Length: 80
Image (cartoon, rainbow, N blue to C red):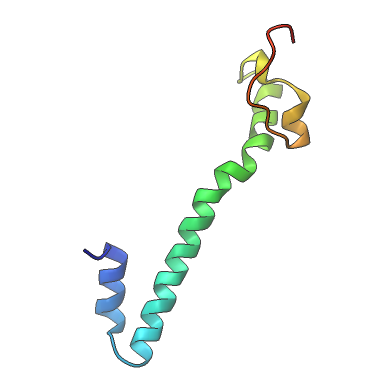
C-alpha cells in the first residue's frame, strides 16, 4: 500500500522519464521534512527545559544547570 503523498506524486508527475525523477524528488523532500520535524524535539529539549524551569513551569528537580549546558541527566538526586 502506498502512502497518500506517494499516490498524489505518482498521479501528478507520472511514472516515466522526468516524471519519475520529479516523483523521487518529491518523496525525498517529504522524507527530509518529516526527518527534521522528528529530530527537532530531541535537539531543542534542553533549551526548552531551561527556559520553562526558569519560569517555574517545570518541577524544581528540573531546574538544574544541565539544561542550560545542553546536557541530559536521567534523574535527579533526592538531596539536590
